[in-house]
Length: 233
Image 1: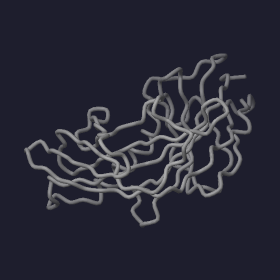
Image 2: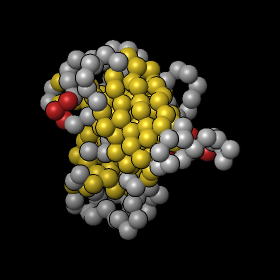
Image 3: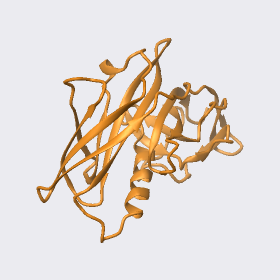
């Protein structure tokens, strides 16, 4: 399940845009992100791990300083050798809230060079968002999503899924917003996709909290909630 790709592609662009061709292509940076969601009535936690480079990764692994003997193997992100990722499978989500730790990344690059880099993640998490309402406004031919403010969130984003497939991604939204509207002609739909009247889709509200170190591509936690909606009704 691709939890946060829409924001990760933005963050990758910010990271690579901050680099220059004089930068060492055999160096990387990592980001460990706590994922928060509901499973039944329980709030559960997992991790998403990302590694970025100005060059090309061949392989990336990571370890958690608090987990002896466990290695996370990252994989290429949708064909981009500059960005590798790992997402906790459903079985690894737990009701135990994470504590502060350090993730250590080990990368091998396309030219055979290696690099080690770290990311510290605190135990701070966001509450699971609450989507209050999804309403199709016939007079405007658009779906409006309304949510309660997520305390501590730096920003939000809206995704829409057709089954397991991501078909819409909003831009990053400021944390003062509590509503967002999307029409069949809005930007953000995948190429060639048009929502079908009467069909059920899933709306996902993502809430983001950045690490407090000033790096715009470093997320601390992402919490999200899903809600079904019927397009056109």
